[in-house]
Image (cartoon, rainbow, N blue to C red; front, side, top):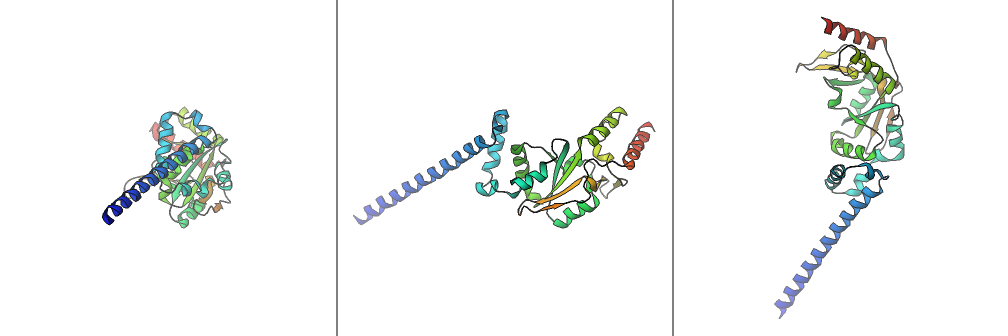
Length: 235
């Protein structure tokens, strides 16, 4: 008789635990669905594929609350990151060490061959930013903000196109030092530090600004870089 009671008791506990797990799973699914619906009505402009990608990003995270309370998405930090988004091209780059972030502010942004290998374009589309941030934040706590005015970007983009230099990017022009080759034979460029707005610690929310920042900065060296490219093509 005692054995039967124990078995019944064990089955009851097991059933209770199963019910508990189902409730927890249901709550998480409801959380995901309601979160998407609440995000500024942006879901109306997203395709089913975009929505599925977003849901997959959320499901990768075990602690949902920590994901949505990331300091990067608070008003002050978002204001710093996106305040010039309507008239500028904004990019972010992640680094683990604050000394590296400080060095980028002082010297500029160093990149090999293509600027876009480690600089990610962002806009005021918060869902898009959310996914990009979640996929990159493991690269470091420090988010370096790079900003180029549309005026500067469009000017040099049209010049490159006008002279048949479509294989080159605007970012390859906006450097005040000559490009160099590293040990892997990659061409290293140094984007002017004037385009570095600063950086954000996405864990603490601390913002560090670059006193030399000027998204509309233009230099005579940029025109010389363009002339040099033109001469190489002609030769």
